[in-house]
Image (tube, rainbow, N blue to C red; front, side):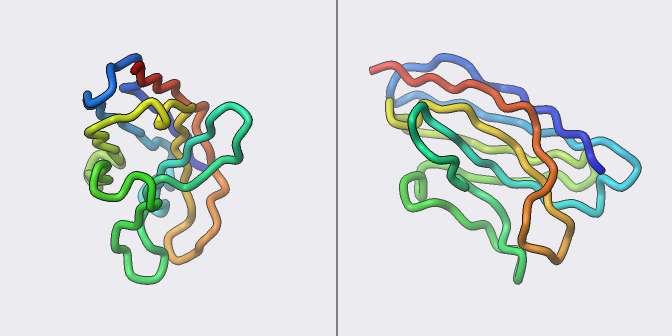
Length: 119
């Protein structure tokens, strides 16, 4: 088990930027890989950005590719999501999730953080 705490959400105008952080804690935190999901009202949860379970390369949903960047600081067990050129349709609850290294399924979740982009 790993505990995940997100920070950095809030309200921003369209075209602006935000950086989300997710810190993992727990005795086995280093054995997990984290990614970012989001869920907008009335929509299904979608993977926004993560790291490929097969080769570790960053992966992005088509709707954010080129605008969002995922990065990680392994020494701090923290993953970041830099979100640029934000659009109103990026408004959602963003959640950090973790999966065991070498497996594709996320099974640990943070509480989620609201990101609101105003037009």
